[in-house]
Structure formats: structure tokens, C-alpha cells
Amino acid sequence: MNYNSVMAKIKITQTKSGIDRPERQKRTLVALGLRKMHASVEVEATPQILGMVRTVNHLVKVEEVKA
Image (cartoon, rainbow, N blue to C red):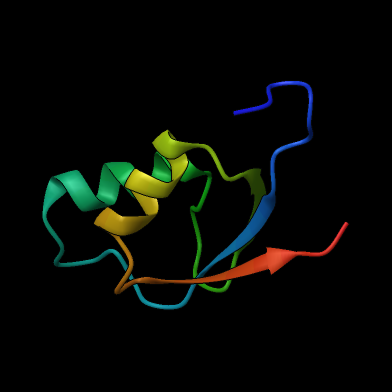
């Protein structure tokens, strides 16, 4: 992997509520920076972030951001 290149960015939008979800999923949403419905964040697509997205993939929508 070339660490000098810019990592891809993704836009994560919360589409479903974290209410009545396991505590782990609620904390993952907060760790991603999602605190309200339909809120969006743009983050770099690191393996850690992608793992967090996989944990809550049924609650969010993910789009690739064009540079």
C-alpha cells in the first residue's frame, strides 16, 4: 500500500434510528460522528472505519466521495 497517496473518502449518512439497538451499535454510531437521523459525515475509508460501518450497515447509507 502506498501511504503517500490520499485515502478514499466516504460519506456516511444515518438512515435509521439507534433506539432499541444493542449498546455496541449505539456507541459505533457515536464514534462515527452520527448523532441524529439523516446526519452525514465524510471520513477517510480506513480499515477501522470500514469495520465500524460494517457493524451498523443496516442503519446507515454509504457513498464514495469524488475528489
